[in-house]
Length: 202
Length: 202
Image 1 (cartoon, chains in turn purple, blue):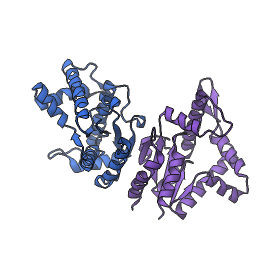
Image 2 (image 1 turned 90 degrees about the vertical axis):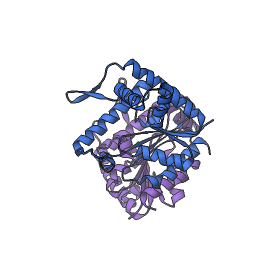
Image 3 (image 1 turned 120 degrees about the vertical axis):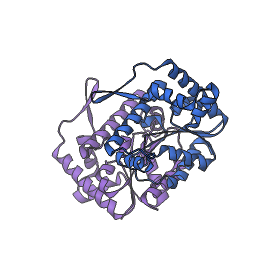
Image 4 (image 1 turned 90 degrees about the horizontal axis):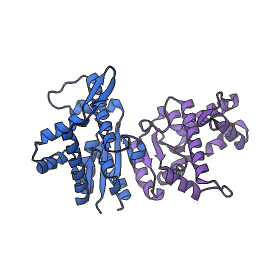
């Protein structure tokens, strides 16, 4: 049986970086956007189109006044892609030891006994990280960035609720929740890897 | 400056055992019920009386129908003891490196930069642990034990809300949240100690 780490994270908390570090540390295969490429290969669709479709269905919040809402219905295309993504996640999880970031993998792989991590941080740290790592040309104010963080996290929560009855970010659904505020990720990765390794049996 | 680990925990999750193991592993002083003895020395009151008073004020939930409620007012004696306990926790925290279990220490010591852990587990694991560790003569059914667990945790949450505006068990208020379901504590203690040590600076 393969060893699987799933890593869910708040936007800006450094979860993706930690995922990569854990994969390197343990010699596991790392999956994040790589999953989009696999869907593209299988469906002959463009990765950008797939990404957009998946986002369109589950990731773009609408606003009504001061509260959030979401598209009431998910397009058939998006549902199809979610189903394909689900199958691919199950497939890669049985192929080799791996770290899978996001995509509701901890819910999808529930029966495969993954070690599931949730990474979070305080807003100040997330804003600082987003500022440091902003793509060239993006020049959001802190207020706009905060809004973006909340929207993306809201969409992740929504995606999880479509996939399962688990609540995104509820500590009960994870084996380890890590607050990365003020933490240097390369410094903690070996210890987290060691903990995961204990949990996954050696 | 001393190094401080605070450990909050759900009843039955093994938090106290983990606290002891961390203290041993790191050579830190361990405090839990020891704090009652210090209050007793300072006040010349009986530890049992102190414990009861602290419990009476913040720890005994009342039931109204199917929901919980608490004593609306906290007795002056309890408030006095809470204030003394708070001062003692601050005193011991500056005396030597330590692990402090429960008593809202993470809220009380907020300005002392403790490394704060929250330990939790699924209900099944907590029930199994309580069954294994039940005091001689206690023979609760699983239903009664579940009720006890919920009551004690409710009281801990209440204590925290009296001490601060932090919400007990909210992962945002801790640096590390550990799910101990199915975990052998002596096996994980060294890794957790290592993580704490990194966080506390060496």
